[in-house]
Image 1 (cartoon, rainbow, N blue to C red):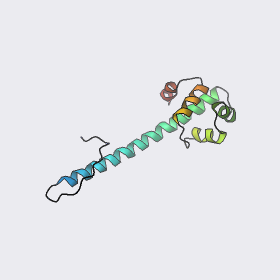
Image 2 (cartoon, helix red, strand yellow):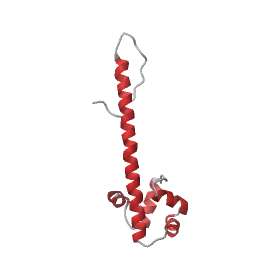
Image 3 (cartoon, rainbow, N blue to C red):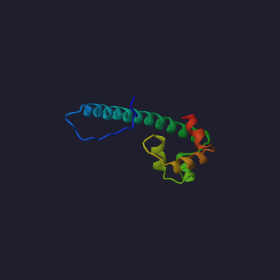
Image 4 (cartoon, rainbow, N blue to C red):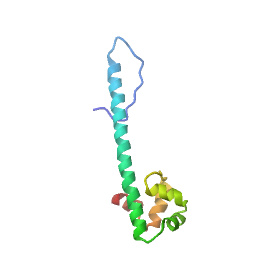
Length: 109
């Protein structure tokens, strides 16, 4: 099995049948990347639900929580709806505001 991240660009050589293999590699790579996008979206949705649930357990309104994290309320709303894509730094700040570690946050998701 080829590694899913292998991308090869080789000039076509008519005396040699390699271009067909290269096309298969690219096709498999694209399928792999599509699968990763789906997995990322699932994790993103679960993480957003975990953040919202923990915030509500602590009794924070979305506005107060956003102020504590240091982001705008609308951005926090996007994160909780899995529309926003927070940076690692923001995730660490969110985990700190939720009184947990980043590891615990992802384990719950």
